[in-house]
Length: 164
Image (cartoon, rainbow, N blue to C red; front, side, top):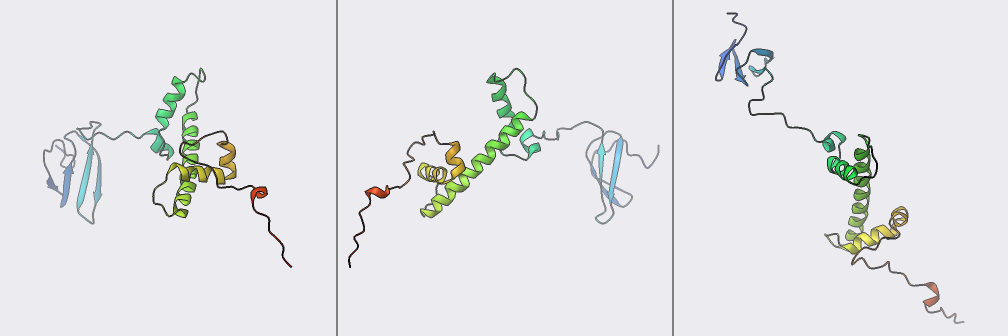
């Protein structure tokens, strides 16, 4: 019977010169007012009412683009160890994302140097072979349709003749 408590409302209504947006028909649990726009939003109960809160992925929590959950699943299915920590797939996803970003940045630079707008395997090869650390990491890797670095040994070059 208290006029300050709204028990069951089925539509948008006026209450104390404020517009009230109804989110549920349960008892009031919190009331927030915004006096500048005269709008009040009332949050009710625990019921989702069809507007459930979207779940946050572990990738979003870690601020990554690579799929942390999928990498964790692959680690578990790979039987690499009998136990796995919660941070292992996050760390691995972060490392893989960093390596991918590094290779893509260098390959994009190689594509721009060749006046191309698309990265092709040749650009990836040039990027990896010209970077000392990536070349060490991917030294035994063959990239299909990548070709080789342009290199002519100094012995094979024609000798400069000195004329007096």
